Length: 195
Image 1 (cartoon, rainbow, N blue to C red):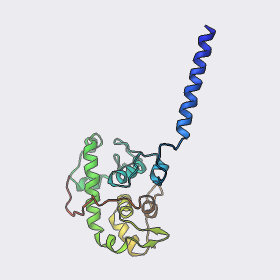
Image 2 (cartoon, rainbow, N blue to C red):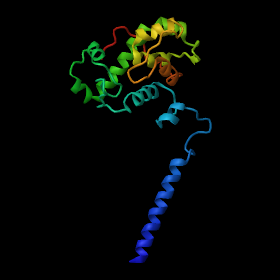
Image 3 (cartoon, rainbow, N blue to C red):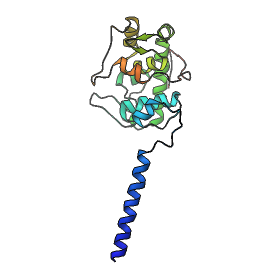
Image 4 (cartoon, rainbow, N blue to C red):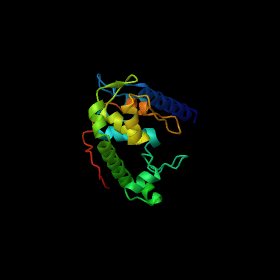
């Protein structure tokens, strides 16, 4: 009986040691790997494409949880306000929270509308540096998701003098920096985007 007990303790120790070593190892990443979103949030996307963009925003907004509702009443994986949902003719918030496909479609539709609203500002501002932040199209779209396209216009047109922070302290500048350099060419500007 004593031998079996010692054997089980040894096995448990080996399992712990091996799994701890895996957690500390970076050997699974390519040598030239430099995606800061992956390192900060541990999101398994190596490319900075639309999927990585939306998943990074989702993680920041709700840790990627479709049924999340924050203390201010923002809903779902991407933390939509009720008025934004109503723009897309979504009135049943419980049904919205229980429908991941609808949430994904709503996110893309909102990005299309924001890209249309900000099309001139994107053309004028991408490549500039404001308050030490390189302005990119994905950063602009992420900031619009946080604060609305109108606040992003004010920020860009004032060269960063007029800014915005949400109730939790997240700012346009933070989103522009954190979500820079994603390839969001899949998002086509559309004033009348629908779900």
